Image (tube, rainbow over all chains, first blue to last red; front, top):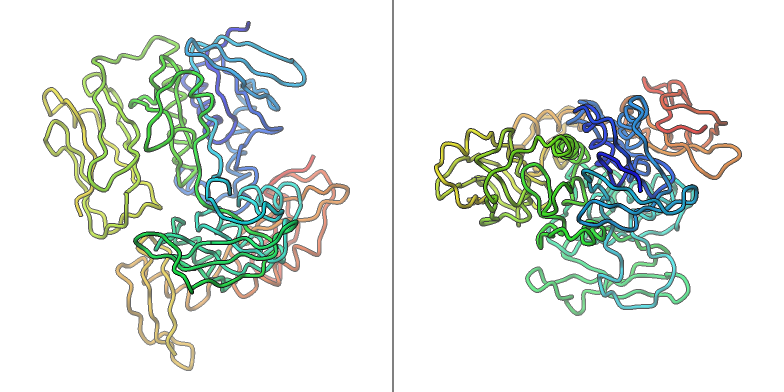
Length: 420
Length: 118
């Protein structure tokens, strides 16, 4: 058994930023464990640009963004082990990992940062009828095949779901010579960024079919076509008579991301129903002492820049915990999701002992125009801001300083809500 | 002639309608709700530009090299730009920032590597 101050599980954008921040806070005993061959996580395959506008004020591609952090990890000499899979973690922060070089390794950490990211919802989660023929991929798998492995999954493509990865893949497949027939979306709006709808679909005349879904899969060995039907916007049930068949050899699914929390559960950490990630307080510490969570394993973000920001906080706080520098008083006040709000992170705060600004992040439940974002503490409104538009596709950030909470005596709960 | 575009400035995604004269001049714009939309529409209707990212063949391996244009290029030249990227190949080593094609299609932009091959 080896002792380590901070173990970071995952070497993607969250793990890298957490490691860099822990080091810059003064920690000199960090270990990053990464299951893939190289550091960088999903950024390795995101070769399109648009990353880094918030963090670096320039537009970078995924690999370039990752390099900013990897270069620092190397310059600081932060140890990392790739091709290493964490297979066990307990609430006393004993971490078990395996790789081909060292075999089974057991580490005893003073603090752990969970940064495992998320995975895509697969076909199985959708209940589309039809054979399990080849040619059906999640958008991210296709992205990996094309951008990292140099393999084209097909030539005539239909995309189900209009999340950003699906939109980005519509453009990538077009660029690589495939024909993209349409992008099919169940909801009356796309969950992707406007910029991606314009630059990945409109630019190439790819139709976006809102209120539509795939109702049948044709083909036995290889995909031969997909039947698309319009759905009732209320019930989401297909409307008979609206079916049309698209002849395609490839179906890409971009139907949502799920935080990858198997290890979190193993550590006995309490998970949130609405984010599917750990419940954390303002320091990003979970219900297990000294175990922190950040990035897409905590809740699915829209922008990597926000992942990095969050992970920096987790890394710095993990080191504060190691030093015994965390001062939390009281049991923690619950942060509730009010009207129009889902998945607020953090789920708990300690208003009395808070010494740095807290960042509330949430997703609006629907599309609201000219709405107000409010935070209430102990029945009093402590913050409000007007917004011209709120939509589930764009996460909302509300940063509040500790002083704001100190104006209200004995806070019992905090509510984040939308007034439309 | 009327032309419709969607603003990408924010999630509002305003639908902006432009009345374009025979000489290609923008006579009027409507549908935008802020300055960002107006500015975007003028740019998009006069000379739309895009960053292009793609992949270059690396000799001796199946793994491709990711590349980008060092600056946005004229939108109508995207297919030609992709053709130029497809027609070249590189040999290891390649470092991030290496120029793969200088002044692609006479544009004020190079094709540069965004990944590395060692």
